[in-house]
Length: 55
Image 1: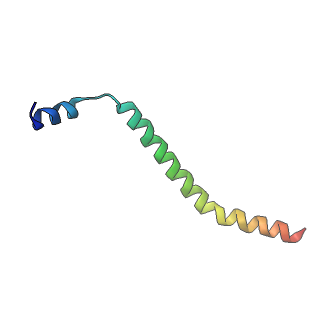
Image 2: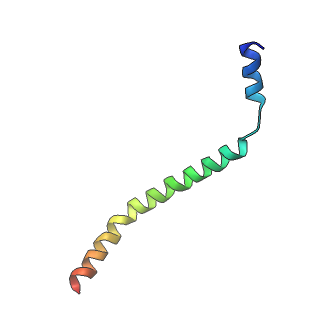
């Protein structure tokens, strides 16, 4: 088989597509979680310190 025939077979092959989709969704969820934690993390930390110092 030539290089181009193997490349065409690889492009037409659909096995493993679901794994890629699940990995993509998991990655996007992780990025969203990191963004939410980053935006609210400082506020929660400040509130925690305020409550801690008032005790």
